[in-house]
Amino acid sequence: MSHLMFNSSGLIPVVTQDQASREVLMMAWMNRDAIDATLRSGTMTYWSRSRSQLWRKGETSGHVQHLQSMRIDCDGDALLCEVQQCGPACHTQRSSCFYLGVDPASRLVTITESPPITGEI
Image (cartoon, rainbow, N blue to C red):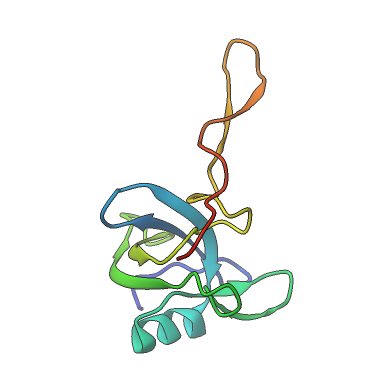
């Protein structure tokens, strides 16, 4: 972890991507403990800034993310984690948290993805 540049709060941003589809699923934060927990368990653990505690993705929803690879960007100030996603990644039940888009011409926010995922996981 000597290559990592944490911010003044001891956090680093992490972009999570589905390894199979290459879809960007979400962006969250990790601290050293979250990185250690993720590497130890093989499932994604983040730092919840609102609750000030570790948050294992899927702990309550069952939508677990299994770590496949972890990469550090060239500046050491961001991570990219490729995962095997079980169920939707977003709390809105969509596959990705990035389902809103902005039309450059009209500056209107639009939904860029299909409706929420329903049914069995």
